[in-house]
Length: 321
Image 1 (spheres, rainbow, N blue to C red):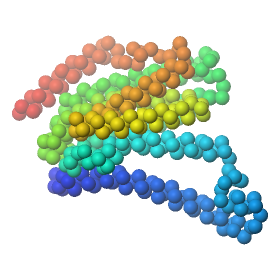
Image 2: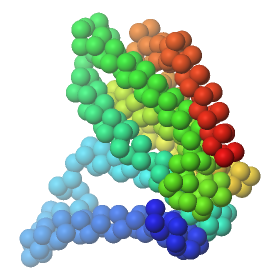
Image 3: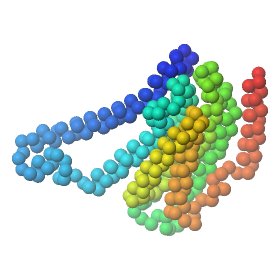
């Protein structure tokens, strides 16, 4: 917060965006280092062997490898790369195209760090626990989804309840985030963020957090219920989603500036929610939870509507003062 007030805007833009590129290269370097260290003892153990099997084992082409394990590891590695591209796609577009000035990049990165606090502190632990719970309850090798059991009913009840709670919390974040985003960015970054559309970016990010929370739960449930072939199909979907995300980020940022990146992220999350929900309904069939049961109830919606009106009036008065 202190650096945002005293450091030059262009320097902040260089540090924030280029740092993401450096972290990607560091991960690649770490992977190559681990691979080298694990292969080196095997080389030393077999360097004096002259038989053909030992030679083939030396170069890791056939012997000592499990093809099914290679397929699983390759799939997971592809998923990690695609999710990294989906997560930091905006940073790659900003770095390689320079469609935004360094000052705007610094403002966008600062607002993104502020908005992502909710995702890191609240949503990430919730998604990890939900995925662990769904994976433990489901038995992918049996006809779990084709029979009516107490564990099956309890799982569907928990899934519906968690989605309902997350949707209500997401709506609350949207209401207060949109209304008090100007005040939040001024307290966080001072005039640098306040006079450079920081409030607008944080408002859009509040809406993005709502979509992100829904996607986290639905994707956890769908991934926990997928078999190997469905995981491979999901990898192909992520490839299409990554390409679409980069295209939307480039186009929307050209017309909407920094806000285009957040809009592109929101559209991408809606696309992923659709895919996950499509898989969930295909697995659950007629027992899929109704959409209205996931949304806030009528009384809750009325309360949230009054809260939105009250917070908007309050924020407008603060701006006038």
